[in-house]
Image (cartoon, rainbow, N blue to C red; front, side, top):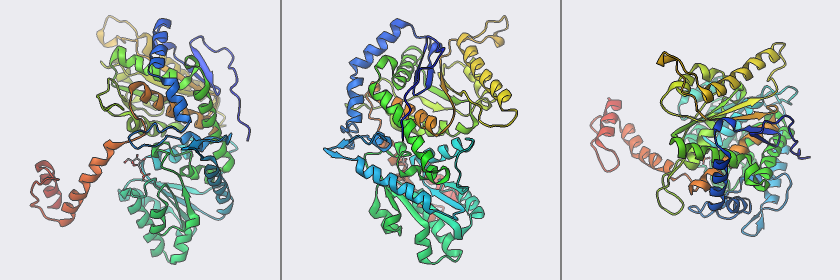
Length: 500
Ligand code: F6P
């Protein structure tokens, strides 16, 4: 497959740069040339270029877990060797690509796919399936692709009511293969297959797994040939590029999956090689850092003006906040800055929800406006509607930047509210891949600038540990639970309320 070279975009505003045909315009960041120079020199002092080189070279930048963060190898379509402790990982990566392609050709007559996974094992493929559904002419294998994440049985019941058991395939996706939501949902779906008359051998034919814990998947009953491995050097939230992205290939064809990887790879090549001053992920990271220094911002928002990208902010929340929502730096000391709260949803819907606060609230919340040049349908109304969508996007950014004075204080818009414009030529697999890799590389850059390890997530474990004795207390049915070492008085009272 050929990699698309970055084209120069004509009529680029002076404040904009383009890479992989994605345009970033920072005009409304209100950062002077001198301030940009300071930001770039800070990045150099923080040894950002060395960090980028180390990341791609497979150095153990995830120092708390003593591993590299090599998700870029999963989309390395150049197949140039990527050395992990002296050994090239690309043969193993390519073998999984071949297996994914083979599976796409094999699944004939499948009506339903139930993809079971949560967090990083869910957001990426779910986003991609939604984001690409509108692409005209995209190959579609016409399967109903169901995503089962929550332990809440509402989702399970909804899916099992629709799926046809004898033509369903189940993909259990879990890096650790120990995540309770996933293993319990997988057991429930296997039980449903049995209830519907499938024999044990038919059930094992229907089950597939994507995991870094192959022994656990085998112990669960998944056949060896049905297990797609990935590796501990891929963080869960960076794993859509592995076989975690199987739904993309199964539904839209292997070529589409390859395009998705190609877009991300092109963005990696840019991130790795472009000077800091022309580097999209770096510029976006530095702009955010500037707003943290200047306005002490505590939140930022990503608003894609594309319904198809409505899942993007949810994917981004895990990426940014699980990667960089930390108070302690790599040196064990408190950090000055870390991830702001991230939120967003598709524009223009979002305008009719929380934009009031963007315009007139007391907090300054930087925004990434994400627009797509090409309309996202071929309806006769598409061009006219799309023009309105884009006008809204541009108008909001302008209003936020300049504000408006008025005699009535209620009508004053303070302005000076920073934003980026990101413009994609179209929303297809290639540019979706480029967009996600742009934000992944931005998260890594921010981690490097803040001195945070972006690739572990120790903060999510404690709640999981505490849930165990609480679940035991709930299952006892007793309504006189007393406070103990693992259950405090407030929680004990709540358990007693639930057990009544
Ligand atoms: O609880 C957080 C987390 O560990 C995420 O980092 C991860 O994406 C998710 O759970 C699911 O984990 P797994 O893929 O191991 O089931």
